[in-house]
Amino acid sequence: MSFHHLDQYATVSSPVTRATPTARVLAATAIAVGTAALPLGAWEHLGILAGLVVLVAAAAHVPASLILRRLAGPFVFVLAASTGLLFLVPGTPLIHVGPFGISDAGLQRFGFVLGRASVALTAAVILVSTTSFPELVQALRQLRLPGAVTTALGLGYRLLYLLVDELERLQRAARSRNAGGGTTRRRRLLVGITAAGLARAFSRGERTHRAMLARGFVGDLPSLAPKSWDLGTALTLAVLIVVVIAITLSAHVRS
Amino acid sequence: MPPLLAVRDLAFHYPDGTPALRGISFDVERSERVALLGSTGSGKSTLLQHLNGLLTPDAGSVTVAGFAVADDTVREVRRRVGLVFQDPNDQLFLPTLLEDVAFGPLNNGVDSHEAIHRARAILEELGLVGVESRPAHHLSGGERRLAALATVLVSRPDLLALDEPTGDLDAVSRSRLVRLLTTRPETLLTATHDLHVAAALCERGVVLHRGVVVADRPLADVLGDRELLERHGLAAPLDRSGGAPSTRPSGWRRAD
Image (tube, rainbow over all chains, first blue to last red; front, side):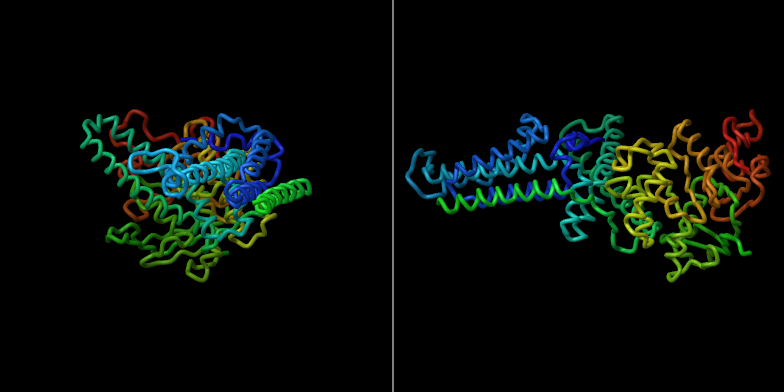
């Protein structure tokens, strides 16, 4: 199984991939936080931040079609979480849907939440498209995230591939014997495969732990020295953060 | 001078009571290359895991370079015994190959820059150039096996203990790995049921059967004893056509 398509732009040479992964994480976080901090109705400022994100995407050579495809998944959750705003925020009713009314204020808040989510999610999509998972974990370590979290992420990333491979092998073995005719049998098969997969994952974990002990593991996962920062990256990141703060503050001042 | 590895009356039962090792004794001298032969379930892997304290024996002892394996010596013992597991996927658990290879030195107190330097050097030595930032699932089976070997060679062990080192490899990868192992200076103890690999790598054979050492002789003698091999599941009893298995398959030569 290969997930290489997930971070395929990590190997494309661009100003974004030349920056350290830590700088990329900080930049994406700054844009997401700045967007979330915009006051309601600051459409102009949201537009400027969206323009900034589009510029970063262009600099990273990440095509719009890929960003839109990847936004689709998380956007479903954003829609599900924010649809209630249409009906729950009091204001002048615009449309009636059965016993519920959609107010102007509700519509505006709903739209703004979607806009904010789109900008923040786009920044996240650019980050994960241009940064490999190992680099992300390394960046999170450098940002002093708790060791238990980064260790779990690092080991989980590697073991996830093994687990999915195991499950695929089990599934193929079952299919090769014509398993799964009828809904009940398919369900039973799924339960069996999942249980066997979990049992294998458990024994894999135990064997991996032994392999770690054999190489001197005593409880702390040591990490390598992270990539060093260069002046250009530091300056670019500083400018980006200042711009985001300025946009957010000016939105608050104007509101 | 004491042997590099001394195993004395080693006994071990699995938690369900099944005996795995029953009073095993043998020595391995420095620079010796020993094949631990036995059919599946003979206790080879269990024995190897005792060599660096992963399993605790019910009775008997293991001594490595003068250090009896115990709680207070286990760190030193693990530095000296490089154990390569049967499945390289068990051994490659970090997001990138470089981190995996540097894992051992970092645990042994080597600083980060030196660990990276050593890891890169051993990867280059094993021909794994350009894959250091890849995760293990982006490597081929042969590369993965070499990578697992790199994760222990980087700590410069005295004893290299390999568990079925060529188990899942195709002919080309197997030949490459065997050629590489013949050039290594470390003392070698390799558990295998592949007699061709044993013949290419080792000069002495220790045969295990149901947790007991049933033969400990020069490998050529072991491989020439058809009855011994058949009795302990290392050769098929019905295969009478070819006589004793070849001790030196063509293309593989042990570095004497």
